[in-house]
Image (tube, rainbow, N blue to C red; front, side, top):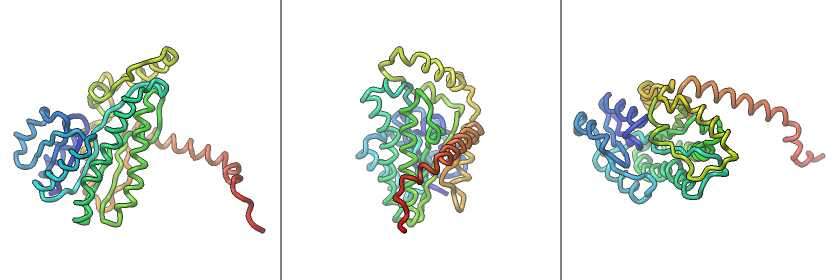
Length: 279
């Protein structure tokens, strides 16, 4: 039996992860700003499910919440940073408040959760931190640059974190889902407050690209994603990164091949910035 701490547990992937862990008999602390949608899980899994009302951007509250969950469960085994939101808009259109708000939720929130959990994980000599990134943390796209920025930063932070905590028996995995059939585009996607006419065509293209998400016809199945997560956390040697969905896999491979080809094409120039070898 594992004890989980899952942020953004009230809907989407977070809800699917929560139900999957509870369904196999694990303990779960489900974190959300509004725990109302989690009441049915309290009723169905009395004693195994603990709703936690929390804004992960409030560091002091995060520390207290993790302490309380550890006190109730007696341990922490899997910490899933899933909470976050997106912002639609061009980089030039982004305001200060919405930019800082996005980074607070998507980057600093997970960092505060990690900082709160690590003393317990280090003390027990085990644990698994799961960071929910995105295909947008691998390949960036126009008009969602702020979201991509936050996920690329999360990936970098998690890469460093993984090396820092590996000596303590703690694993770190980045999940990189593509389009999942959730209401994320409706409930977790915001738009910049001020738009510019210069980006009207780019707006149209982005909204068309996201049409399957607006119509809730995304190819990714959250329940299958949750099954994959269970497989990952049970694995003796869990992966550092896992793409979720055929679209995410194909796009990531294509982008990396393109980047490798470009690096290789400029290899001679890249190496040319070194001092000449000493005679």
